[in-house]
Length: 230
Image (tube, rainbow, N blue to C red):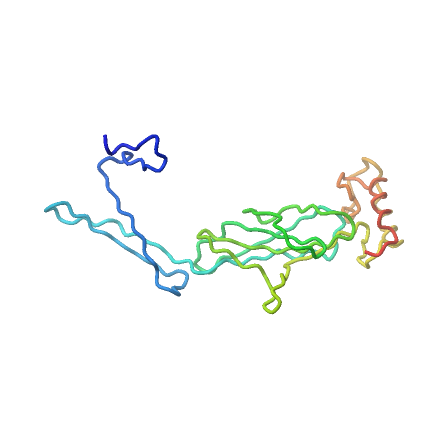
């Protein structure tokens, strides 16, 4: 059968899936500057010999003209764990086809940005380094027709303007830039001992190793930064 697909040719279409049916493919170039939401419709007529024309169902295509936008949600000035949650969100232009996913980028201590995640999710746990590392984040959204958001940059310098920044500072509970006796006193009120949880409300930030208690291991982490400006 000359219409059967060639099993040895991966590019040969399976033409016998719907025997007796035909199809036509075509492409059009839309007019420039059409706004999102513009509808382009088309129909065709099928004529066999002397039979009356048969009209096909209407085909509808809707223009999505613009890229989506997104941003990383604000973070606290400092976090007391090297692992912390980062969230982001976005919107496509009104009438657009919707966001397919995001790329989230991070800079460590003003180093060049690298891609942390390419994902469809809108939150994830970032794991950084130890005390004193500052992290900056921005997101880039893409929609279902491959429009990609531009990175947020300064129009004059071209430098990235991050959506959110934070610094890992174990033990600087009052955020004054140094781990001091005030922070030590705050830590003491939360000590449970090994396996001594659950933690009291407000003590979650003192459980540096995230094992649900505040013990000597957490105290050792506090000592690393004690008396040192962040």
